[in-house]
Image 1 (cartoon, rainbow, N blue to C red):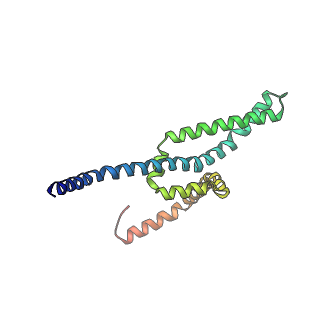
Image 2: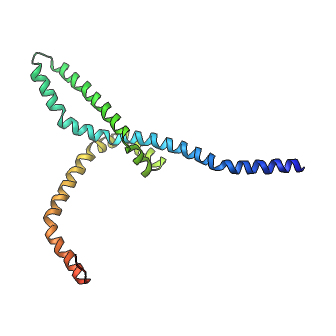
Image 3: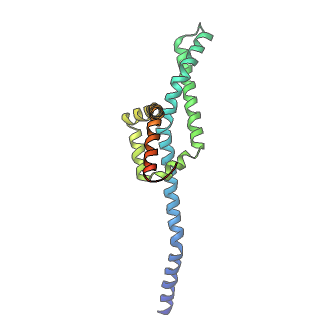
Length: 171
């Protein structure tokens, strides 16, 4: 009986000692899943915006250049070459983004469930459109806000001075 009790006590102590390691292993597995999901989200949410910007800025000039340099080439051949180059460019962008700490940042800010939700949304037509358009929309919004703030700054500065003066403070 004493031997059995000692074995049970030893097992309990051993199991208790292993709990942090088991938890760490589970956290490690969750973190690995989180990082993989974050990579998927980066590919689905960041790459479309970058590719959209590149498509507007680099593809038309490249296609025009190829047409000028190869006037006797079929336009379908040129379009096919541009499409292949664009795909190579996309692969390069994906590789470069995954080498950054962006997936880790996403994993830090979002839970596994949130990342799954974002990834699922990104796979929808609306998600694809959103992530393609969002960078341009945000850029234009930032520009407008910056311009508006610049013109509103003198009035804002007067208001700040009034608040500080009323509180007996100097800026």
